[in-house]
Image 1 (cartoon, rainbow, N blue to C red):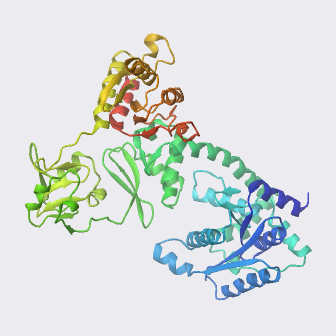
Image 2: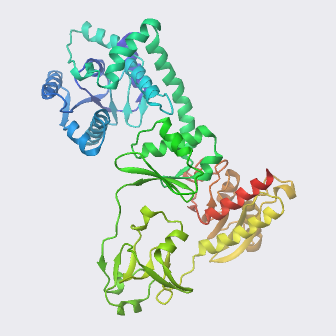
Image 3: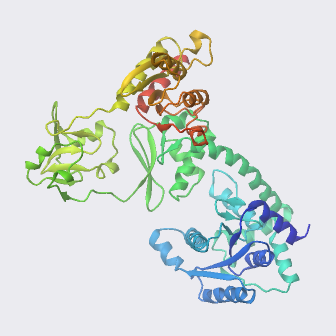
Length: 545
């Protein structure tokens, strides 16, 4: 197969339905070869060039690419940035800054012109270099670059650099040589010009073998990443879930968390976090100029180093008040919204309490405390957002989700006593209890005797109607596919569950069945009294062991 046919086949496989492609062209051999391989394809082609301002003559490179585009009637977009200056300001290394800024420009450019994908000229040699860099960095996976990564396509990953250079020579097309590619102070350049040539003397197929390693590792990575993402919620991890999971999945979950913060994802960094999961004292690990990893109160989370504070604002009218605070409070002078201060206290039903003690009891980490909105006058606080309020001024409301989940937990405890998996469920209509049940698979020798199914059957009998329209199912554990299917057939309006079911969950943990195009949709709410549900399950399995 010719180089042209091979590259076209690769592109067609990666983007079979695309119409408009944006090619990232620096002017070097790889990207110029890509331009001439694809410029006459059936796709609409546009060209983008990013000037990193890392060399005095970088503007000439931009003019070179622009002239090529004019000659061949191709649309051209460009942008310039002082990468070195931005890297210094942000605390990034030059290579990282260049990559971030370049891809940022390419993403914006693609959106502007309506291109579905962005193509880069990365080839098999680049892949081998990337794998070696990952080895030396101690990366969790030696997966190199993916041929398709979101909007980015790399259709030349199976083609050697020498083949691309030979192609350009065959059509008489010149290209640019970026002198920074020969500067061995840069890690990639050092590997390219020193390490790889030396190793290739002993191992002639080094490039192909490293590229093959990346290909195989990507399959393993894809599986582990899928499983790991199930452990991440609101950009945080539950430490006990991490400890209980397979080590490979735990490692990948931490790596995903680090990637979300654009932090260096090395095995050393991942191990550092893993080794501190069981630590009872709060731990903070510096991962970048902007972020920390916080391991505290049973959770691992990426947090910003920037402290968020509530701006001070006067409260003068009823419209300014929280919905659960009485208008009577407006007689108090100097009433304001603000962040916490030293010496703050609140009057509760059992007496005066320091805010610092409340935050400790609620296990709210230090960094999150200034972001909590307070209603106060002087040092006396009357309302703590989502936490507490002075009962003298509080409008009492009933949290029905917690109320009915507590009843489901009581059912789960009955299951525990009967040596059944501790899952409980209740069915409610118009805030009234209709049915309650717990797992009885062991007692009834029935694999379908899950708490949800039994509660739904009981509710249907109680209402004398199999259609449970307007009813809400409360269950302590995320339903499995069978229980979700039963809920769907019963026409339930809503499902409220506590803990994630990481082995069999049908509402996000394993699969998201509610996203399918069913005749009706069920409203879903998760995490209600999750901590209590998790503890009950943990205690049950601990006893079993």
